[in-house]
Amino acid sequence: MNNQVRWGFAVLFLPACFGTASELRAQCCDMAYQMVCQTVFEERQVTHYRNECETVYDSQEITRQVPVWETQKHERRYKVLKPVSETSMREEKYCVQRPVCETIMRDCSYNVVRNINETAEREERYVVSRPVWETSQREERYLVQRPVCETVQQQQCRTVLRPVTTCRTEYADEGCYVDQVSMVPGAAVPQVAYNPGVRTVDPLTGWAVPYYRPSYTTMMVQAPPQQVVNRVWQPRVVAKQVQVVQYVPQQITETVPVQVTRMVTEEQVRQVPVQVCRIVQEEQVRKVPYTTCRQVVERVERQVPVQITRMVTEQQVRQVPVTVCRMVEEERVEPYEVRVCKWVCEKQTVQVPRVVMKQVPITSTVRVPKTVMVRMPVESCNSCGG
Image (cartoon, rainbow, N blue to C red; front, side):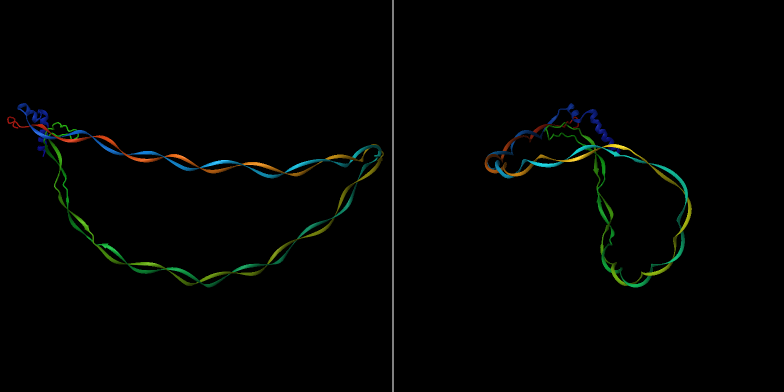
């Protein structure tokens, strides 16, 4: 394998150093040619038509109802009460107090009191209250709640779980492993291959591609497939009956003795000591000094002139204006406006759209294949060993 790769690389590099085989043969002998058919593409102008939609507007006259608002004037009559004031004179009599001043002599004699203090003692008797505490027994009655226990029969409901056995179908896989033969594609192996030089034509342009020299290339070749034995599980489903125990709730009513405590009221008597405070009054005597103030009256004579104002009543008459307001009924007129809507027929020209189909020519360039005869050189030279 290593020798083949070395000879392949040597063949690849030798033409590059000394030139191609056709060039060497063309130098030593005359070149022979042959006619070869090749495909050439020509460009042509082709016209085809495409459908396009165009919107055309047609004039159409329509009639529609148009609202027209008008303003109408109306009058509203109503009555109002207007106040009217009237003024009249009334005679009114009233009394006036007029002051009259007089001077008289008034006796303003007064007494002058002079105090004389005298000290003495007196016997004073007073009563004193003294507390006396006494303890006595008092009978007190009170109520006591005494518990009394009794046993009674009471109905109670409880739920128990009762086992119920049922059969259920279960499926089990009782298969086994078997040997299965399968084909595995071979691995990709690199291999040196000879690539002869050829001349080709570019399908897009139609021009001949330059000549490619022959060479050795390395390509990946797939090895032949191999048989592989694998162990595969082959299922076998078997149905079996399995017993299942389920617990079903069931309600049971039973009589249960219950101990009940009842409170009974009893009256009891107890002796309670009571402390009583009694007030005892005692009479006591004490000496109290006191001061006596004795007043001596002395008369002082005095005459004082006094001006006295006396009110004298006089009757007078005056004119008083009196205003009387009375309501007078009056009729008034108030104008107001009302807007009225009327429907008026109006003709109008509108544009109605319509779609029109038309064909538009489109010119495009296509490439048409054409077969031509091309002269190709033939590599044959006896002297060169061709």
